[in-house]
Image 1: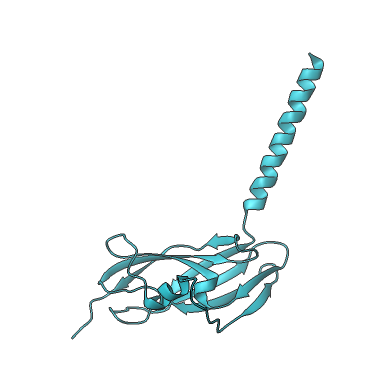
Image 2: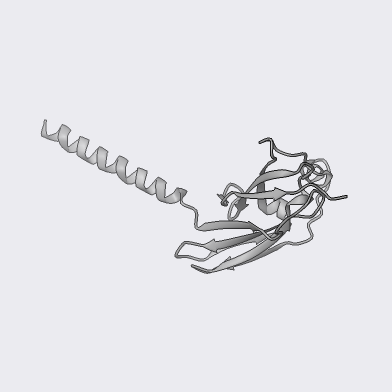
Length: 163
């Protein structure tokens, strides 16, 4: 009976230790905060997003800086709650049968507590054709191809175009 209790104790401790290790491994070493740089965009105006990437870990983190469509996964919802039409640029980038031209291909090592800004035009990837409030969130890739960290979600009010 004593051996069974000891085995249960050791098994429980090992399970708890593995759960804690797994939870720690799931924590991202980065945080991403986005904001729109345009105050009052109208339909057809470019919408520029600034992403602040911060190393929240105690060790340096190596992150790629390529074209935005390669470094980010976009989540955009139009005023009706659906994903707006993708631009031809984004469609062609997702077509794996065509070559991809990379115009920026560098790496940056973020030291602990260091941050860096990145900007891109979200309107290069999605059509903002209807006036109303759009929600935007991005997930930033880093490390291996499976490593991503989600940003905050922002709302951008797009006004009707004045004639």
